[in-house]
Image 1 (cartoon, rainbow, N blue to C red):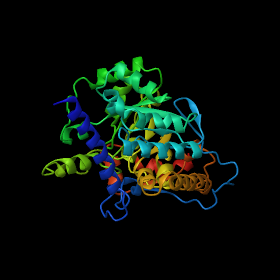
Image 2 (cartoon, one colour):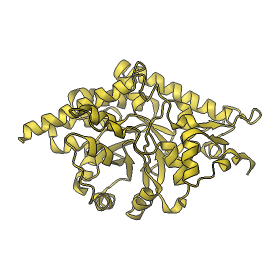
Image 3 (cartoon, rainbow, N blue to C red):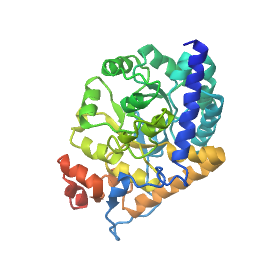
Image 4 (cartoon, rainbow, N blue to C red):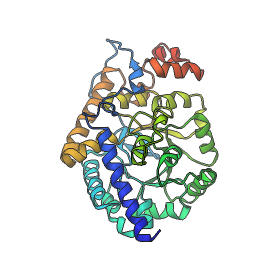
Length: 369
């Protein structure tokens, strides 16, 4: 295949990803993430009517990559590499700058192979010169590629995404998984900035987190099932759509966070969470289960595509207000307080907890201790 044809196919794939991901989050999509339930709906906070605290001292600040972050949710990696997706990145970066959120980008691998795609990523730092920005590459890229990706964005951290399910279903996928762990180890050793390893929507198990920690990974995004479905996206791109039977594969973010609690905090990476986060209540549930910060992609992408940066700024401002107000309602003046709230684990998530030997009842009685 010629270099020009290969670049054209990568361009088309990026455009397909945005189009199909946005369609999943349209309100009219009866089976999309915004409409269907996910396992965040299997979590309920126990309401203690006299536990609410005053709003003024509530502080939702967290730590991201050992630096202070004013808000515990961020704009997760989505896209980039074409003129259209570059404009989306510009709008996302403006919203991040105006609201003080950290921001990740989509995979910059396309720009590492085709310099003409680089402006669609550089625009992020140009629009947001002082914000916390994360570059993004796929597992399987070299340590030198990792350094180039960081340099391209002037990034403060690097996301390395692992996507075995997506590569399996992707028409042009490369399911060569055997050297992924050693490749991650090399990237961590060579990267000039902290590395966060993330799934793309199918979850990280305790076994995986333990293996990542063994090769030096200090930050991991469990990125579970329930949000933008890359299995479905790639299957929709396949002639015949012959992998539809895999729908629902993997674990949700709440399931991964519950499972990760079985690992000693000193022997696993610091946990971030994403996948199916639709509103501030989902953010608080992930934080209450132990996430340090929560990534939001689909809900923000659909907004920025529809109404641009100004509309996304308004939406993020609403999420920020609601985050503080809900923390006050729950009697949690800070994130540590959230981790002591009582949580009811029901439905499919409760069944998962039972089968994995997780004491769901202990989460319902945390305030007692």
